[in-house]
Image (tube, rainbow, N blue to C red; front, top):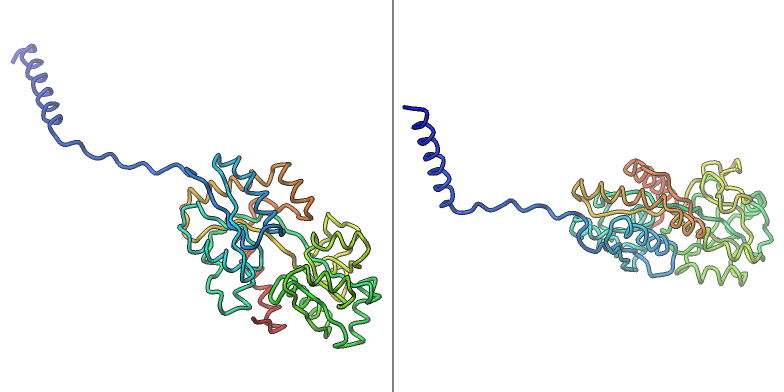
Length: 331
């Protein structure tokens, strides 16, 4: 065959193939996954508006909205010491559109003290630590106690005479009080209140001797001189109150290290790309000067970046379990 004939035959074959392909039914194009996030994100706060967890959640939501380019809205679902809101997130679709800004109570403590709480840490995807703040042991004016040394001496010499209050059974405040008792070998009665407001009323009214607070809740009353601070509960002094000693500085309380922390969590089994996107948005948000100032003004310390969350959470649960078992705390 001549070169001209070969070229003609080749062209005819090519055109025939193209014509046949044109008559084939169109094949469906594989659906492309929607870029995340493609719609508003809801952050559940498992308490009513106005508390420290709510403030942390709202501050973070505003910053993450800027980083992610979609609205990030807060939904307050109070009840059962945070368990109802946490349960909603556990049961949500693991698509990154329902998250939780939670604290130690609903994440790590509730299940240790209440058989009605059915979820566990493994039912969450931990996205990162946001911030923490210490608790503080305070004395009423009536008690006459002005220092932690005096507190330890007076309570030790009068077993069963004194009581301390917290915001409720199984709260981190309750566990901190029991930790003080366990470390120093004290016998003192716990009085659970339905929140901080009635505890404050009884302390200011000299109806109870001692109390445990989240630092931000106690500061106004400490600064006014109405409550006497005896020490903060984390291992190191708080940058917010550098003149106030940590309880662990006392030789009899050197194992004290408990506070309130705030974390961002999602349901279990979230896709890896979504988790990575949210972790980056969280880390970027925690470096925002505006967010840092707002949380530090509220007595919180911003968490270090890239905390090993499974290790952190497991260590916290082990610490709380030891206290719960010692004090036989149950609801």
